[in-house]
Image: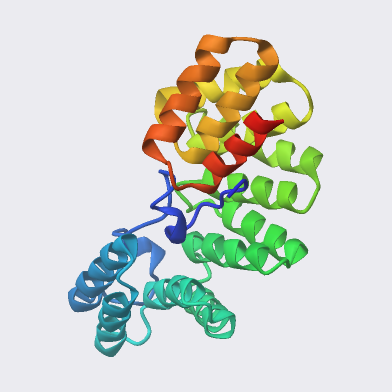
Length: 254
């Protein structure tokens, strides 16, 4: 996948995503802590990480039974139903999470990712920016990065670059923003800039199939055959069944 959005569903691909329910009670006005709900949601998140969606749903149901008005339960419901391919239920729960706690930018960030995946780019942008501008949000760079990747997916690379730079101004080590900026630079034929962003990405994150294929393409253009071969070897050895290897094979046959 070329454009990566930061939400719980991407945890198996990139680092820096939203994960566990927040521990700060100030973000949950007029709502007491329910440890049963918390514990089950944490377990649900772990089951989602491993792809056991049936067990994850069981745990979310237990969390809901323990505290039906805990906003983060609806956030995780939304992510799960998005994974299960039920957009109507996913949207219903994201909206419910935000209605229960309008200060919860994690839910807004995830809802924005959902809207972007559904092709509702204007709504997604508004939702991401609402999340990012919340002074209580501890990681606004995540929402800016998502706004950027969504804009690029909507064929608005200039706007995407603007948001990605905002994300990097807050957190210069945000892997997804560095990788996206590398891709944007490559698409604009700024190959040295693309290499620079990818090298910064390498210092803060493990490679994935997307980054390795991008490395092959960058070094092929720049003529560093050793670096190109190194990226290609890592891609073939570690991700032999990935779509990126198939694309690499297509490139090699040209």
